[in-house]
View: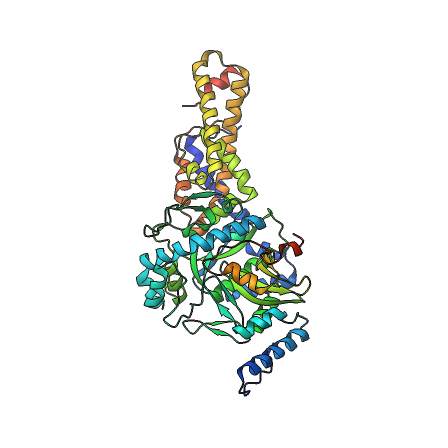
Length: 361
Length: 154
């Protein structure tokens, strides 16, 4: 039986990373499962995708009609005005460079949709990067938006996570139509609450020189705070529900930075994590207190938890390909995990020798 | 979808009527539903409408800043059909913030605000005035069926 220890965690997780990266269905795989007619239309839309946008794999979880209405109401009444205020103040120079006139920027400073001096609106849509209609759990979790503009008189900065400002950007209407088409053909007959891996068009934040990129760059509030990307959608998906369950067990590891990053996305999950973490601590303390007379049930629990931890590392690193593709801010947190202070043993037989060999501190 | 507009008619109302007829002819030929009566009334009041949170299409494209144009009814319907967003007996009449499409369905005689990606109807209205009232700033979204909820089976 192989022993997983701190010394070879890095190697193992790298292997898992590579394996999982390879196991994510490719766009070609996704397209193979589609009807030929839809595949052709999807390919036509992809071919039109301009420089400045790229496709990333994202789990899309269709929200309910009620959630859809709730997110839309908050978006229109509260979030969109705050977004315009934010970029008009923070990105004024870039907006001017992108062709927005001073009048439109003044409008935005008031929280209005930009229009020129003749009252004509600009051909841009305020779009959600992670689609509102496919945002799963983050369509119903409220959290304080740290990007909320100081100038906004709105007292409560707490909004649904899918409506957080960093998930919004101005997108030319023509590109928005392409993005929707790409999504649509991958979502044929998707049911409410169903999760599906799709390739979604998102703004490419790498440095570039295309005019389109400049437009996007000018409008996205992300310089300091990268957008939520696939992980947000993952958090919403069934897969991530299972992932969260596993991450909860991850609470046995001393370094909880990664857990907190993930669980910041879902406060309910976070609370559950802390509860589990407390239980695990209890077990450890009990074991330490009664080291000389450890009973079988505690021993089994500990060894099983240790084994689960090793498994969980696999699960955690399943998410990394998505993070890497999307440049998610959580990526750094995860990349530091393998060097954490931990020592992991595989499941042990119920023998005193095995217990003595296990390391918990 | 290219209607044969009569551009040389000196009377604006008559020209509009001519354009509406031409649009309806094209819609009928392509097996879409014709424009509902109350939308025709709306077009006579204002030939399309652009607002903070929605656009309603007119018989002709509407000017946007930066030389942009908002689609007209036929263009939008044609695009929505091509993208399999709407089917027969439906016509695209507008769009909202948040990437939803406003359509009219002859099947149930309702206006629907639908998600383009899933086709799900998120808001339903009996009259276009109800949609406008519900989506106009700063009025809050009241949800579906603001006109005659008792008439709808929801």
